[in-house]
Length: 148
Image 1 (cartoon, rainbow, N blue to C red):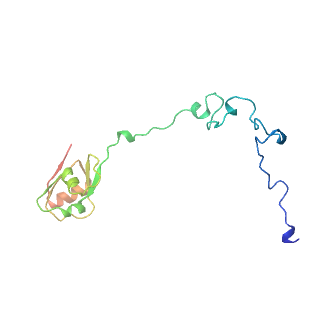
Image 2 (image 1 turned 30 degrees about the vertical axis):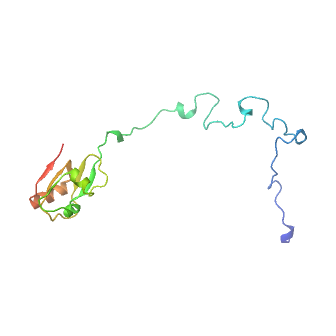
Image 3 (image 1 turned 180 degrees about the horizontal axis):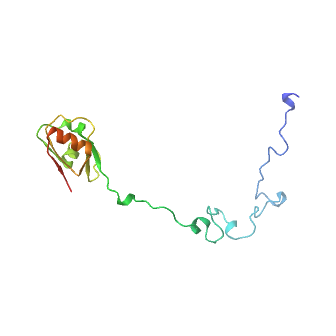
């Protein structure tokens, strides 16, 4: 056997059937679509899951699950270590953090976390404080206020 003698297997390369090119080819006139009706028209494509008008399987099956996302309260988060950019004696509120660009996306509520070390004497007003943040604030003897 030589490379020049290689041939494709029988049926490996089918020729495409050209439709609508005269009655001699056997697929002329209606191009294999029959006469009239929705399926004969151009642009026809059946929806995925369509069962001829019968209620499709995905609609016969019961709905499942529940998402509680609409009831969650989202907090913008800031760590104590990030508050070292503020000056001593300042009162830090969510609005002041947004105005100074420390909090980029404000979601309506602010939570203070205890990551990092706070070295400034400041007063913090926020909606929530983590346990580690409160522990650090108590240790430094700083004022804080929990907003409602």
